[in-house]
Length: 125
Ligand SMILES: Nc1nc2c(c(=O)[nH]1)N=C([C@H](O)[C@H](O)COP(=O)(O)OP(=O)(O)OP(=O)(O)O)CN2
Ligand SMILES: [Zn+2]
Image (cartoon, rainbow, N blue to C red; front, side, top):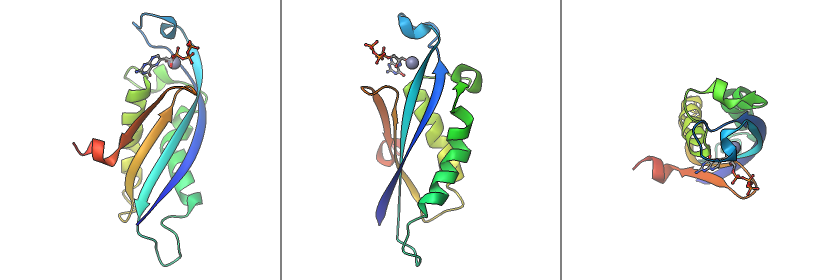
């Protein structure tokens, strides 16, 4: 088994309605998403072609959030935690055609200081 990680960035705006502080106002972040999948190395020498993984994540997540106002894209409060849970679900579905792969870890950086993380172990609890 080998784990592969691909890193994505996207720009998005949001506000945290009801938040007691500046984040209640419209503001934006340069998000960084780290996607880790794990699986056996196939006959072509790859767990999955990085290019295929990139397209998969772009189509299932990045293209839906990049340069968007997140409050209009999702029906939940767009905190780092909630976004990550949504990404986990969407990416899990997108990976169904690749049964040899498991989604191992997602990390979402909202600022250069703050990130949220989900691992397969955490999700299975
Ligand atoms: N647990 C969470 N806490 C906060 C979230 C979140 O998603 N989960 N989000 C926010 C804000 O949206 C945003 O991240 C602002 O955070 P802040 O700490 O203010 O970031 P800055 O880097 O701008 O910090 P400054 O000290 O203001 O420079 C808040 N909390
Ligand atoms: Zn914010």
